Length: 99
Image (cartoon, rainbow, N blue to C red):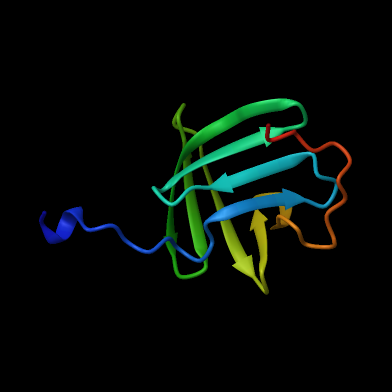
């Protein structure tokens, strides 16, 4: 196994981010991929992301690009405001079941 094969610790932003109404759920995966659900539509958007400091660059699987920034533990992704899953500011209504 080379040093390039060694697993890396996941980035601190890895995990599920949710809009306050629970409609949009964006999961940042440890492998640099993301999966975004909208309402009942699972995997509405998928692609890859890179993190530089507190800035995130997204490229979805169709080639569309977007950006985001983490400020004070909140993800500002284009026109969306997302909170960590479990944040008390997130209501459960409209969330996609994960089962």
